[in-house]
Structure formats: structure tokens, C-alpha cells
Length: 244
Image 1: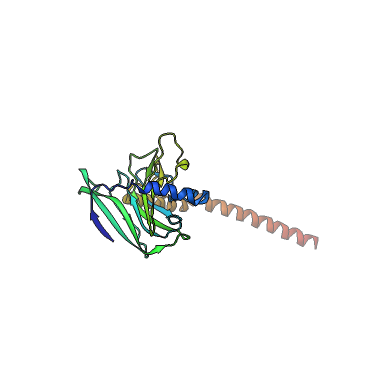
Image 2: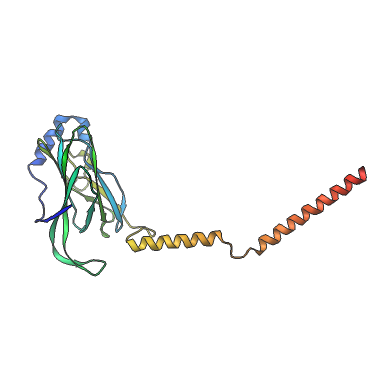
């Protein structure tokens, strides 16, 4: 995995026009097979793994590169390795340095993750790319978009269109993949430490539930039931002997 620095990447360009034309020529089936994110909704502040799927090439051409833009508010991203691609994190400087949860000063962020194919992905096949990241805590009740440029052996498709307010994203020709974000729940995990604490609490609660605090009432009840059964058996035996 490699990392390089650059200014904010510009993904929206002439490729959008070529992408729209390619989809029109490809027909309705191709238009419905968008690059998209499988997960959702996710909770604000949670650590999530988002899977971006690429279902086809560019108007029949094999895919050679997938460049994923990371939305503002997400600074750190860990991409999953893919044996058929090299992966690169493109960094950019933050306008204002921030302090992370460990007290470290952060001066840059991951602006883009680029997967470059060592063997082109054929048009008739799909692939998936995983990104591990933390959802911004202030992103509740919104959609995070990851504009993506898909480069092929001939041409490219720029999946960068973001719907205007009130517009249905399904009406766009080349919509940017996105994930819906909901408010954090009271039991949601928003940090690695929280997960450990939650597991410990669950184990303790389970142990408490399976180990009664006082077994005396159960023992007394069992003895009483057993005594009654013994008395009934003795009476039945005596009656049987009298009849004989």
C-alpha cells in the first residue's frame, strides 16, 4: 500500500459527459447497475466497513482503476487489500489541524483511495472494495457521498453526481455512491474501548442471570414435592396388599 500527498483531488470533469453517453448507449440494464455502497444505514460516530461494488466496465471496456473520494469529516481510512490491485491513499493537508482521541495532532487526512488493477476487471465481472473508517459524529440524518471515478481500458465513468435537495438519486445517470447515516443509539459502539466495555457488561449480566442469588426456596420446594410423592406411593402399596 502506498501513500502520496496532493491537493484536494478534482473528480468531476469531462469524464461525466462520456459516462452519460456510455450509459445511454448501454441501455436500461446498464443504467440500473450503478457503482454503489452495500451497507446502510450506519450510525453517526460508529466505526464501519463500507463495501463499494463495481458491477461492470465502461461501455464494454475492462476496468483498470477505481478512485474513491473520501467525504469531508472523515480523516482516517484503512482500505482492505485486494490481491488483483495495488492500493494508494492520497493525502491532503487539513485547513486547521485537529487533535485525535489519543491526544495526537492531526494535520492531514485521506482525501482519496485509489485501487489500480494489476489485471483489468472484465466488463462481465464485478468486484468490491472495502474501506474501514469512522462515521462523523455530526453526520446524523444525512447521506455521505463517495464520488468515484472508474477508469477503463477505453474511456471512464465518473460516478460523481449528487442529488439536489428533494431530487431522487435514482433519476441521475451516474450517481455518486452514498450511505445513509442515522442518529447514534444508546447501545451503539463509537470507539474500540466501548466495544470491550459492552462485551464485559454483557458477560457479567449473563453470569448474573444464570447463577441464582439464593437457591434455598428451590431446594425446599423439591423436598416437599418428593415427600408427597413418597407418601402417595406408600398408601398405594398398602391398599394393594389389603386387596390381595
